[in-house]
Image 1: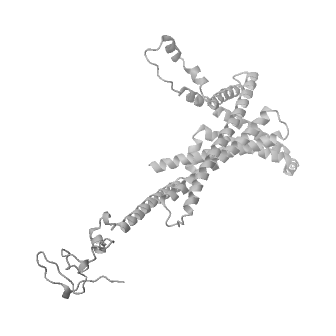
Image 2 (image 1 turned 180 degrees about the horizontal axis):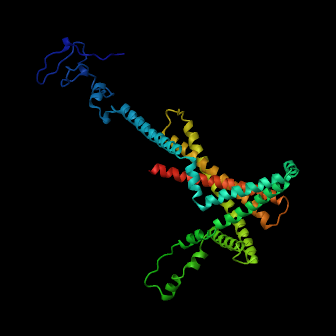
Image 3 (image 1 turned 90 degrees about the vertical axis):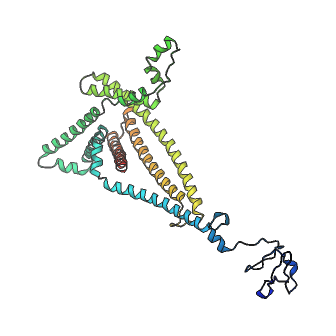
Length: 381
């Protein structure tokens, strides 16, 4: 195998115009006369491989055309990912810090400022009393209390508890008066397409009375809520003595049927929402699984992985509260079913526990909602 000859100092001969320098080893066929042999390294121009660019020139030029900034670009990309990851971490730290600043007393205060929050607080007290009365009537403690030296005081205490529970029920009904304004506002908020000046007078007259049109095209859950609130108000006015007893009973019956139907609609909507939520969770979990196969460690997680982890945590939290809503709807369904279908078996016991469970679940949802509102205010300030 022949080797390439390298020019040395004693091989350099002075060049004359129009003449070529020859080497003593007979390799003159590989070198042309115009080739500068004063360089420190030369290659055969007839070689099929092009000459390499020296690394020193690449580093000196530092231009992307030669690929000299390959390692710098990678470092810049890693630095950018680190900055984005730090921004995500800072956001999480900011949220945690804001959550720590929110006190429970502030959340309860914001909750009790609303009629809905006070209603749930009174409901918990009301059904806690009913559950206590059930235990008092069924366990041996009741028999021991009846044998006490002052039975009239015990009987008076139980009577006062019963009156308190009934009074709280009426108080809750008065707190919920005029609740029909909310669905009515939603119905009236429906905006129709503005009419042009070329329309007939008959159409313009119809446009002046759009309420019936809005009611007919309103969503069924909103209509159920409107009818339920109006019937509930009539039943409340009847219990207050302003309306007749028979009218109040009929209105209460209509209110229970609307409550029953709206609860069924709520369960269907909850099931659809949970199905959508589970499909989104499976999609995010699939992406996280694919990313885990790349061998990323905790320190080298890309931004997309951290975003997916946050998204998965958010979806799981939403699914948790959807489960709370479903349990509350089931308790309401059990409660109203005893009223509608005149179920007498264990009526007081089932209604007491179902009412207390519904009150606790509703209060938890209201507490979380007010806490989230305070958290948003703290983050925006």
